[in-house]
Image 1 (cartoon, rainbow, N blue to C red):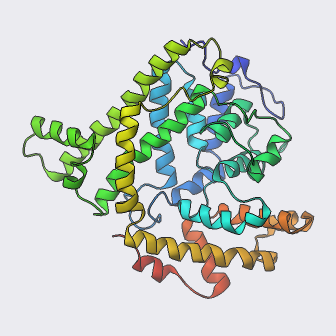
Image 2 (cartoon, one colour):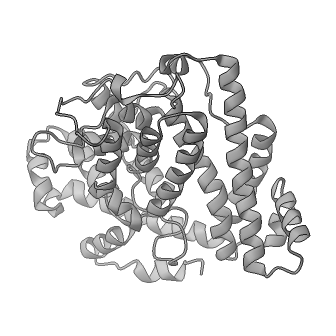
Image 3 (cartoon, rainbow, N blue to C red):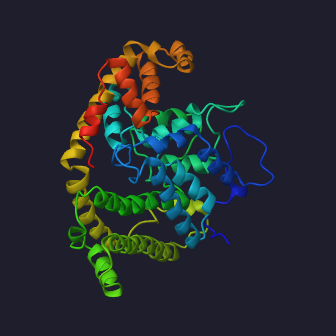
Length: 391
């Protein structure tokens, strides 16, 4: 049974390009399946989460991260009576717009694109699913439902001015109501992203030996998790101990979101998804005490992991690679693959060309960006990347 404020496929606002519905799958199921089969989704397996994708076989990539986000999102959505298919579709698509090298690559592209409207990975995800995936005979993009597009565009809340360039272009054709909050399903996807990386970044940081379990045991929430494991399993070996503690931490985050959402929704008493959109606040969030504890943990991760010396050195190397590639393609767009040259020929003005170049670079995997940099510059940064690896 769905809650009255859940998004239902039968009341969907539909697709930009009308099409015959499936006999066996709901519109939101089809959205999820199209995202899974998209080229951009497959490329996430070779894109950075925190560590460059080939630094180790066990570190998260954008693909494994997205799968973990979707797992959390399904759990939370089901507990709240929401539409799990829509929630999963938004969760799986939320990072499609990330360029190579994670947030470092995004920051580099945003600076390079500053004269042309900037670069934003959420807006780029919309550009991918509405234009850049070109496989269908009748349209560009995946022709997703309005609700899925809304969730991708504003799962983190209303989009404030100035609207990112890539998102503004599509929104002019297909109004996604950027001024309001998104559905509860999209909000669940956003919090599931926070839950997933808050958990797995600790796990990856331990594997990279950037900090120890003893240090984690001194942090809020985590200290209680380690203590509970030690009471139940005295003398447990190191790897099982840390896994048991981190899975308890994971469970605390999920349960906190579900418990607070139930209380918030009971107080708000929404009768439709529009009541959620017009609530004036996020209805899916962490409780204030847990959020305060998470800020302490994230501050720890910022200094000990995201700004660890080798991570910073890797950021410097890959930023330089993006900074080299962009002007090379701008000066000689013939270096782009043949299928991109039709767009180049039709581009009018520097901004249109810059958007094409940004689209191409953003679609690269980590390894392909390194290969292209070597091909176009004659300078192979692979050795410097290997030297800066954390393990």
